[in-house]
Length: 99
Length: 503
Image 1: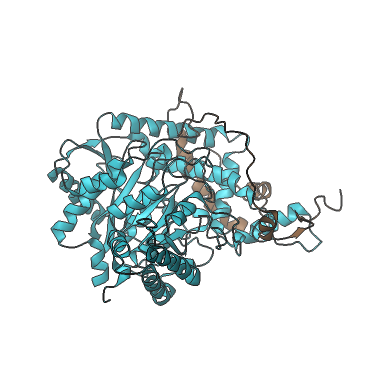
Image 2: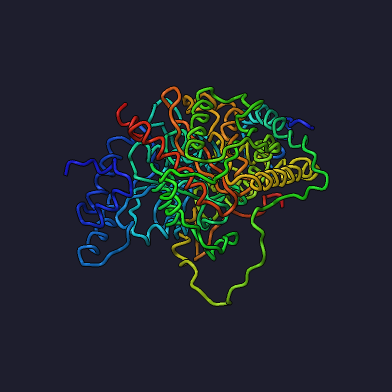
């Protein structure tokens, strides 16, 4: 089983949109390496021909009548947002300067 | 009146309320006074509904005075774990990222309790996004154990456990992903039940690990827990994993169990959870109390035998891959756009950067660790070795339960390998913290119901016994727990929690 380097933790943090600090990278890399070694024990199980369980309740599609029901009031929902404008969620620009 | 209303069980409170001997306002005011005097020390609540609670209680009193009977639970105060969304009432899930958010709707659990007329006292503290076993991962403050204020109350529902054990609420709702109802109940001398997965609605629960999360009752007696479970359980079309089946008679099962006759019941003691060859990490005192409680079950007529579930040894590694993987996906919704805080939106950062800055500032260390671990376990090249393998181990654990239940009606184990530990002792050691969930994880992964019931003290701190049953047979958990509770209460001449009051 592989171990987690500081550079890998930095890459994963970027993928997960976490702007972690250098101090956090140092701390997390060590801690996550220990955790990864512990959870890697799942590899000890003999699971040839064992199907995976994603969910314990057998799921089947459920249909409901196609009836219109009220949604939450727009102003109430937008009141919980960090920024709203013109009855919409306001977001920062999507593309960086260089794009 | 001279009775301390905060000391009464819900079954006693409902009698006084429906007969009119006390008003809902009196009961609510007594609880609020108690919170005002004791919560600075315990830290059980993140938000208290002062005036709103009194207003709701007054409405119940008015209805009763007008001749209407608003239902047996009307006027009974309750506390909700802060992971449960409540309309207009601050909800943070223990995280800075949701600080200040007032949800626009009620979770089904909250709505059902509201329509039953219960009075919301407030929202209880918890490990951030329910990730933890001690409530120290709350972004706001730690919660203290009423039995010893220098020790943890368990977690992640530690605000609920401290509130109920400390008499700051007569009962509370917790949620359990890997043991977060049962373990804090055990560490504070309460009854806590994790229902069959899918039997209590998840609508309006802030998601941590969706294939595992389940809300359930935390109470001072088995009967109260059963009453609360019946009030929140049952099919909900708003939860796509909700099971459309009637809830078995849980109150009836608790009453039946309290009669103390377990003849005809077969009980399996799980070897892998504190049995021969599996005692590393368990307190001697916990194992001694557990053995005494099992002897009580034998005395009550149960046929007790050891049962081996070999795959349970891998429940901890499987859980700590599956739960972080699901969490890394679920927590993607906290992007600083629709709710909660936003950081760095000063015109110099684009959306991507604002998301990363918001999440960096909004999430605490354990949440970040789990998001990173989950992202790793789901990434290309590692998926099969980690997440895929963990899902197959999950199948093996379910098979062990199925095989065990072919021979026994219920399985028992200690709820937690240890009693409550000192605050701070495990904070920098994630593996030591995760080991607190050793006994509760198998039932979580298999989706089967499990209850924790007090079974004595070790080092002056509560010990819990766990009863696990097949899916949808939650009534068996209540029956066995009530039988043990009644027998031990009779033998010691008082309830375990009375020793906390005397201390």
